[in-house]
Length: 316
Image 1 (cartoon, rainbow, N blue to C red):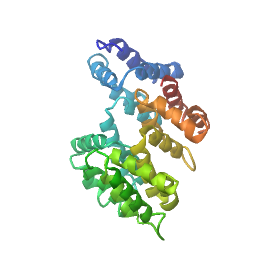
Image 2: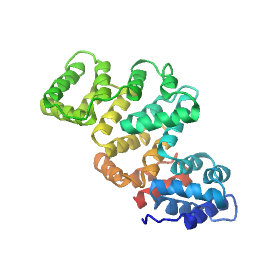
Image 3: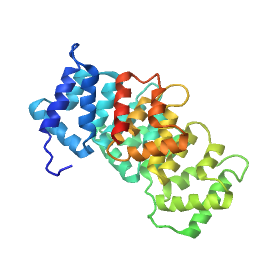
């Protein structure tokens, strides 16, 4: 798209469609498709530019979304027009402030981010809520879950160089902490996965599979269960391939009791201009069905949100 993009026409189309959603005589599907097709053709930085421009003629687009939509649709549209770090900071804040912390959402957001993204989320959280994110996490989780999340937020990873000899040793440490002993040393998995650089960990994973015939993800699935196992598998996927991490989160969000709509918004709708095409291909390869087919069978997703998700997949 041209570097000289001017948001006037797109801002008019989106804001008029949002206002029309409150009109009972309006074609709701047509309005939503207008919002979807216009916004999804734009890279994230031009969506933010559009949002800034709309304040001059139409008013704040975020206020328009809040005023003319509600529920799942509102959450999805707001996420599309917010900077990623601010959006994820809100997801984390909401997860921490529910009755009973939503550990899965909190951990999923944090475990599926790069170190740079975590730094940006921490800054956005403190800017918006006036206190460090890690202070809110401490004491709210407990046990290995808290240890994992706090380390990801606070411990700097080692330099991004690969030491093959060290990778072999670390692979053995992981084996002895899991498959190679009676009982699992979850702390050792957390220590290694939160302190080594991503390139070094990729070498560790390769060494582990070469020595023991299965992946670290498979070992985690066998040895560590529940929410901690889910988060460690998400983290392992993120280290190797962010598209695989997103596909895994989508799979878990649409499998079993209840559909996690926030995970779908974050990993489908908000990635339409980055790697959604790769996520969709990875999902089909890993789970044997297309994203469209999986979503079509989700009865707990409202029609408005499903329309946006399907539009994103078609656009990618």
